[in-house]
Image 1 (cartoon, helix red, strand yellow):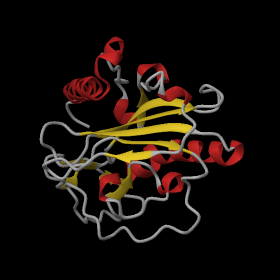
Image 2 (image 1 turned 90 degrees about the horizontal axis):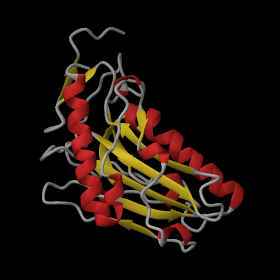
Image 3 (image 1 turned 90 degrees about the vertical axis):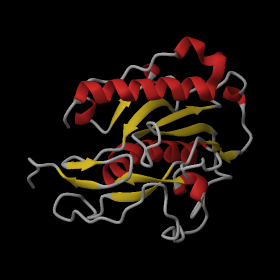
Length: 232
């Protein structure tokens, strides 16, 4: 990707502002988010040494809950937060979600360049396997196939496997990060912490990039095009 340093600085600034606005003064000591300079070579980068920003009070919660932010004035999703446990996990196959058109949504096919053909997926903030949420517009963003499969899915699988094996609870929060009035998120911050064993089983704080190798995305609108030097 071009202009790597400028883009990295923009993402750092957006993440810092998002952390401050959401977590408030209790997170004042974590006001700097360090991103890997080689971020375009990896689907995600570690934030805050992989330590999530959950409150001390929440770190001991063993009740099932899930909350989703109201869409903003541009129709964009906000923070999704849950305490993942077997009680929340689905007991039936996932239903249709095609009726939801997240902000910046485009149906565009790059079958020679994108695994799965389509550039964009309707990406669950809290995955269906964790929450059983189907066509919840507060839980679906416009995300690249790369974000969905290479970035977010491995972390979702880690949480799901842990809960299924132990029956324990995992605090789980996903924050989509939008720059300015962009309709497509630049990426998502994912945080998780296994409660009963104080993070020994699951603990991470990562930022997954909403990019697609070989494709240039206009995050303001969701428009896209092949990079000029892309080759199969």
